[in-house]
Length: 201
Image (cartoon, rainbow, N blue to C red):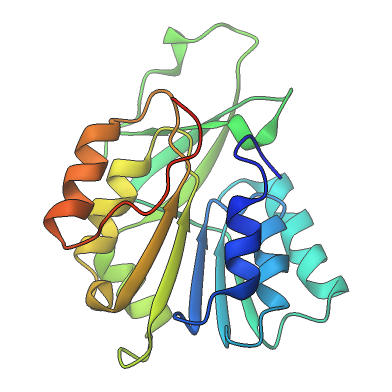
């Protein structure tokens, strides 16, 4: 599964620490479906801001009778709530890039080629996320982040939620454009330790 093989799917099938799973950048829902089969995970929140993958995600959860356990959310996660859009990669929707506007102003889309396809999306920050999920902060939480270069912003948003202290593990796919060291610094400063790296990039 994905470029890092089956490490995370095997981990997710067997993990017993987290009873809540946040699938951030769920795409079609591969890991959401794996988490549905783990009886130790009692609640799943799957975030996918892009319209087409979200429809497939929601349908996949429905076909697996998962809506009692899983809530699908058509949002992106960031460090604050902003206007934003995706630069769509039609060859692989999972590689579409989030473009965040600055101080509420629209990014000039004319800087991209005329053939470029965009999709306006909603992204939410820590206050909105805390309120939306309203999680039981006595429960342990596991998080997967796969956001094609937006990883640091997601971490910063999560770090300021009311449930950050209950996150017991994070699995992150690093985009080549992500600031890997800053992401690792954020997690290290918050007490997380690296237990596994997959690949050399």
